[in-house]
Length: 179
Image 1 (cartoon, rainbow, N blue to C red):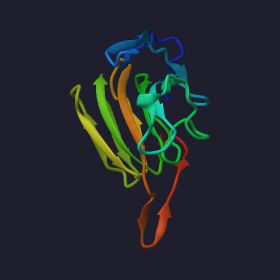
Image 2 (cartoon, helix red, strand yellow):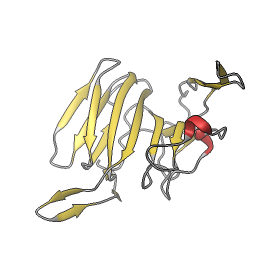
Image 3 (cartoon, rainbow, N blue to C red):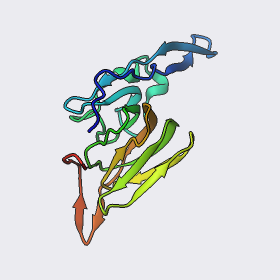
């Protein structure tokens, strides 16, 4: 893994949240920069939360004043039953995430840089253009930054039934480095 402790990180993205005033008019209730934090035990990987809904589906967030970015999503911070989680991840040059799987369907959108999706069968798919999308259907995967600058992507994780293969549930795991 590349040493990214001294490299600059990307600036936090701006988050604007709208709600309603007492007359039912749309208003901006939050307009701020979302800072990132280091993912525990994962050098060169930072993450930040845009919003999480944890009260079930459909959510009651349209009638709640709580800031969804402050909610804890399950034990891992990634997923929980009857929840959605909208977050971003930054990884430094040369960094590879551990192989992992969540019982969710994930919509991943490349924002900046390059990213390689690695599946547990060894397949690698190179995302090169901002706006490239990966739909993750409860499969084991890792991410690699093949570039020389930091990479950012946004992910929406939606609770889903675990994938079944030959009657076996493929549940959550956070594996070892893929290097």
